[in-house]
Length: 175
Image (cartoon, rainbow, N blue to C red; front, side, top):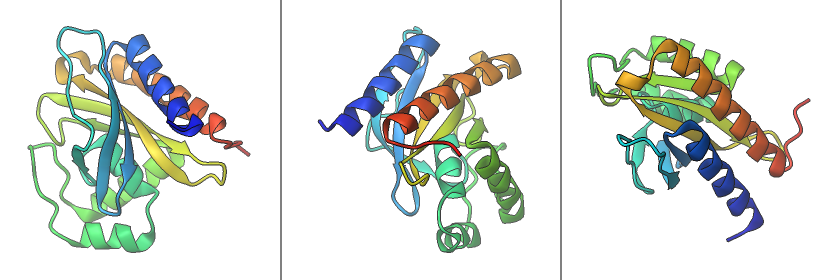
């Protein structure tokens, strides 16, 4: 395992331990987020998404975050196609999603509240390489009954801090 990969996995595992929730590290494949590493939380009820799981770009925290940092060509291609509705919370309007992507890009984090699965919420933050480009995303996935607005705020703070620490280990220096 490279130093870079071990820094990322150590950060993900530590966040799972601190939060008690499942944490994934995902990368962009040009169409969606792909989970490459997972650390399970200590809570009795956790979300399991094995490495290799595909997370749609328009309705998952990891997918939306990586889509926000994709090229305009990739964004246009995805948002001009049919956006599958998984739940009543799934956003299928490309205009609505474009507005959300602007906000996600500005904040460096994203939220999914039952958009992909009714009983699952998630928060995600961007991991940047030394050039400042989005390299990966760290996501905390939570059963919806433990995803109050207060808990969301706490988890966002935790995931952003972890993603920032991993980014710094990769050589990223915030301007």
